[in-house]
Image (cartoon, rainbow, N blue to C red; front, side, top):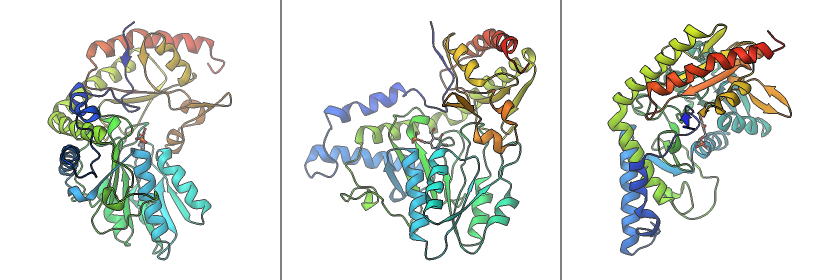
Amino acid sequence: MKCIYLDHSATTPVDPEVVTAMNPFFSVHFGNPSSLYSIAETSRDAMEASRETIASFIHASPREIIFTSGGTESDNQAIFSVARSQKNKGSHLITSSIEHHAVLHAFQQLEKEGFTVTYLPVDSDGIVPSSALEKALTPTTTLVSIMHANNEVGTIQDIQNLSRITHSVGALFHTDAVQAIGKVPIDVEAMHIDYLSSSAHKLYGPKGIGFLYAKKGIPLTSYLYGGGQERKKRPGTENVPSIVGYGKAVELAQKRFQADHTYLQTLASFLIEGIQNTINDVVFTGHPTQRTPGHVSCCFKHIEGESILLMLDSHGICVSSGSACTSGNLDASHVLLAMGLDSATAQGSIRFTMGRNNTIEDMKAVLNVLPGIVEKLRKMSPLC
Ligand code: PLP
C-alpha cells in the first residue's frame, strides 16, 4: 500500500540533496572541528559555511547562531538563560497559552523556582491580541516568549508588533519559530527578535539538530558544562554532518520558498473545499489566511480524532490528531481549548500538513475515504 504522508508539521523526510551533502561528513571528512589538522579544517569550514547560510536566511550575523540539538533545547536555553540571569531585574515572565510543550513546560518549571508567569489568551483564530500583551507587561517583566507559527493550527503571529510592545518596557523577546522557518519570511533585524529557536527536521533536514539565534550583546548562558564549542554557549563536539545538512536544507528552502508556498496553498485549498463539500459538522481551526502554507486542521464533531487517525492509517494515510490518549482518557488539545473550542469538539481534531512531495492525487485519495470514515464513526458514536 502506498503511504500518503500528510504530517509534515510532525517531521519531514530528509531531502535527497541534504543526504548527499551530509554523506562525506560521516566517514571521509570526519574530523573534529576543534582539532588542528587539515581534515578537521574541512569539517570546520563546512560547519561555518552552514552557519553563514542560515544566518543570511534570517538576516542575522553568523556569530549570532548557536547550533543545538533542536527546537526543545533552543527554547529551553533562551528561556532559562533570560529568566535566571535577569532575576535581579524582575521575576515576571510572559508567554502564550498555545505554546508547544518545549516552551510551556520550561515556564512551568520556572514557576516552581519562584517566577510569576502570565499565560496570554488567544482569540478564536489563535491570535495573541496585542492588547493582552500590553496589559500584562510590568516593569518587572524580563522575558516575553510567543511562538511565530503554531504547530497544531498553523496560525502565524504578528511577531514584529509583539516584539515592539515587549521592548517598550525593556523586556527581551523570544520566539519559537520551529514551525515558521522556511514557510514564513523571517528577518530577525527588522522584526526586532532577541532570541529565535529553530529545528532542521521540520524543513527537510535531519532530526536532532537546530539552532538558537541570540542577538549580539544580550544575555545567553549555557546550562551544560564542558568544552568551549559554540563560543562557550553550547559545549560538546558539534554534530557536523547534521549541521551541514541543516545548511543545505535552508539553502533549498530559500530557493524554493515562493514555489513551495504557492503549491502548498493549492493543495490545502483543494482539501478544504473537498471536506466542506462532502462532510457536515466540521469546524476548521486556525486563522483563515494568517496560517502556514499547506496546513489544514479541523474538528469533526461527535467523534474522536484518534479514531479517524487510525482508520486513515489503515488506508496508508498519515495525519495527526490534536488529542492525546493518556491513561485511557482523551485529553483535548490545550491549543484548541485556549481558542475557545469546547472539549467535545476539540477531541475530534485532525491535522493535515502537506509537503513538497504531495500531489493533488494524494488529496483526492484522502477525500475518497474520509467521508466514509467519518460517517461510519458517527454511526457508532454515542454522541450522535
Ligand atoms: N516547538 C514547536 C512549535 C514544535 O512544533 C516542535 C516540534 O514539534 C518543537 C518546538 C520541538 O522541536 P524538536 O523536535 O526539534 O525538539
